[in-house]
Length: 271
Image (tube, rainbow, N blue to C red):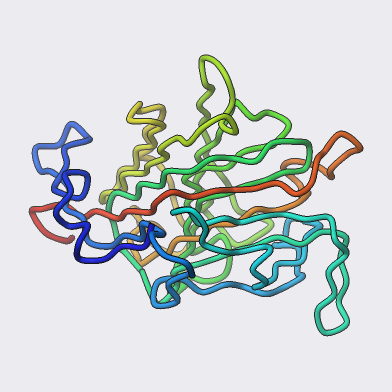
């Protein structure tokens, strides 16, 4: 549902109180996907076959079969269709989007309502990368994973920080949330991160499941590297180190559907 000024009138987009802090959050950026095509003033689509550095098996394309807006949702769809772009072929195709230089934030509340794919080898992610890479290459400048899911474990999601040093000497800190019944492929759920100076909180459907206030960086004192601008990414990987390759039971196509993306800042002001 693409965001327009009309939606500012609805209660969901007014200042909200989520965390235990005294100040509420104020909406500063959103995409409701209420339209027939992607808003390119907010999103860029990546086209590559690099495997994401994780031995992924897909080729990311900008084709409508892989990335589109339909029925009020952003649809990222993975296919087993042997795509070929400028001579590079893969067995699978999918989509990856980012807000870099269209939406970049230092601190805030990031809220995404989404429905997951399922099956061995499916790896949807909602995450953030540093826009300026002030401290150096991955993961010296950090990575924030708001939500990752292994399609073979469709009732469980992870939230993770990557930091410390450049690969392969980087470190990570992670926590998980498991549904009491059903899976994240059954319906839409709200995934949120509250990121403040020296503190991060992860939520599923308003339930706080982990808080982190300890990390470090070889490049600079705490709270580096998480004291710089980051941007959002949404993607559906096929295969990769976390989830393994699809198997004979994995059904294609698979959809990662996003109902909305909303970004809030503290009413009291920016850091």
